[in-house]
Length: 163
Image (cartoon, rainbow, N blue to C red; front, side):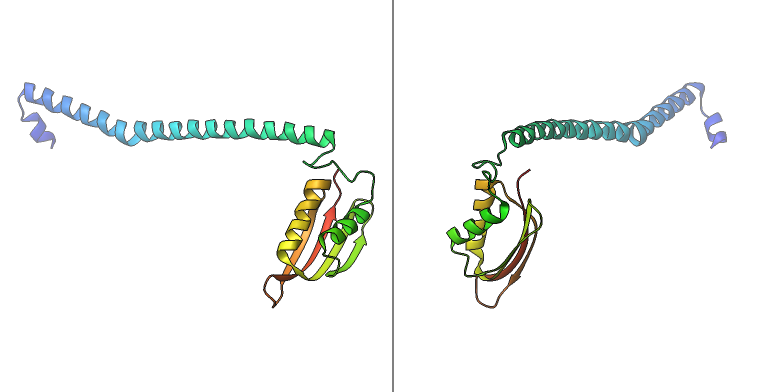
């Protein structure tokens, strides 16, 4: 290869050398610079998305803090001076789920364990949604077992009072 290069005329050598330099620069651009530039651009876009997420989370945290201070979870605001056990029992009777209610056990002032057998799943979900909306009660744990009868379930759950 060296012999071939030296056998060229000086002007041809200059053209071949310039072509080789241009080719080297093109290879460096395509294999090194361009992938790095694309990666930097992708990372900058990722940072922008994460900054938007952070701003949203900060706004949501402020809203949550404000709701907690006002004592509400979107409803009438808390248990209104009653115990969680009383609220759950009354809501169960109002929803007509007391026939499937097997057990309500308090676990301190702010938590109760509830067990239902052979109740309609849809009715249970409306009852649970009502507790959350009206009193701010939330589910800590839940276990749902399907029964053979369509739409019927056995449920064990732990409910917590609003903070």
